[in-house]
Image 1 (cartoon, rainbow, N blue to C red):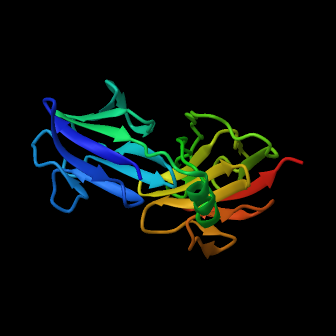
Image 2 (spheres, one colour):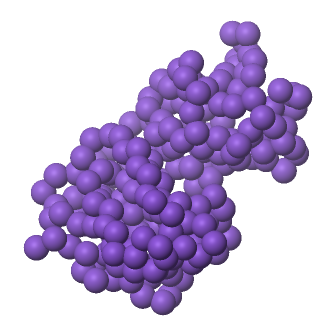
Image 3 (cartoon, rainbow, N blue to C red):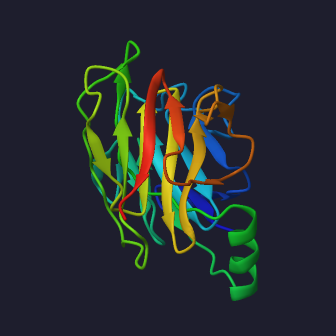
Length: 226
């Protein structure tokens, strides 16, 4: 299990196991990781962990979030990354997983995380922006998301990287490339994305050609390139 080592001025304060899929960080008491310091926003950042992967998201904090000295909004965490929030630091340590554990995880929720966003506003999709990082998954047929509604209806977003997130702040879905195929997951928000008209009720749903997805009021189609 991955963990964070919280420290300040070189003094280790706490070791935090990433036991939950989403762990919030902030000054307010309701956060999973509370840091009671005025330099920390009430809801400062969050770490989302799926299987063996975690990514960090800054929640529009006042003073920002750094990883390895660089300001970030979203960041795919790698072993040894150092998150900085004011005077506090959190070192991310990824725990190695045995082949048996990996196989079991694949069966229960087969997908990974990275970062790319396609933002929707007012029920109509705005131009898609993308920032894709990480190793690509091989031996998969090419696929894309085709927007069906909004001002960009007909636009296609190729699914070329490990993870693609779709939506807007407060309602985000994730499509992940795995050796077994493409999988859709609910990543953020209280309202689940719809797959063929039904809310996603499992950690990851495998997508089939021409499946219909609705997220943040925008309808789209999953298309395999054959």
